[in-house]
Length: 120
Length: 107
Image (cartoon, rainbow over all chains, first blue to last red; front, side):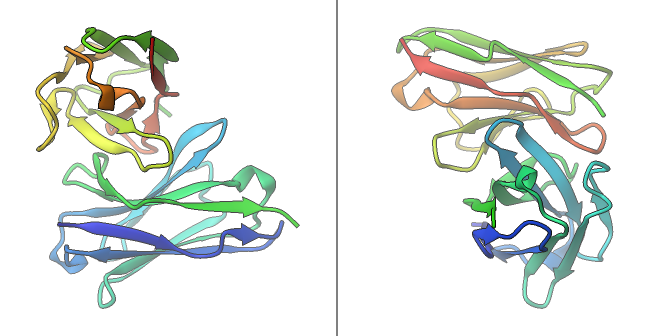
């Protein structure tokens, strides 16, 4: 059974960089076929797809965040990471990691999510 | 970006009712449409992929259909555990985009 778990800070100061890790269990990332994905959920704006990374390092980012976001992967640790710089209050959201299937876009399963608040 | 317009935004219904939620894409997405259920404080759960493929373990009372750029999620007989928020999502082209959600409440 595949499980994902996000970890990272719950509070980030404005202008700082957010770093989150998603630890994957039950599915070796280097077996291929999955697109490791980050999504966030704003209280008002709803669900926003951030981007995905394949175990080889190939990425696809949402253009709305592309200038600020970097995804990385470490198949040896079975984890992948999100870095989002120049954080503002608008980045306050619950951040989820998820596995994208063969078509990349069908997301299953998801991690439980981590609330990240941007505040001084 | 493909815009997904979901309706209604909220819906009150009773146990045993049949309910339908619709989602309209702003352009062609063929059948690259997924439905998710989200309970309060939990992550979304994939119910249906490719417009009509029920995921393993999802009750048969859930079904999905497509007609052009219009998509429908139907729950044939509401059960107490179905009261949640439902989202559609297109996976035809990146950036993948979600509908605004339908909150299904107990009448």
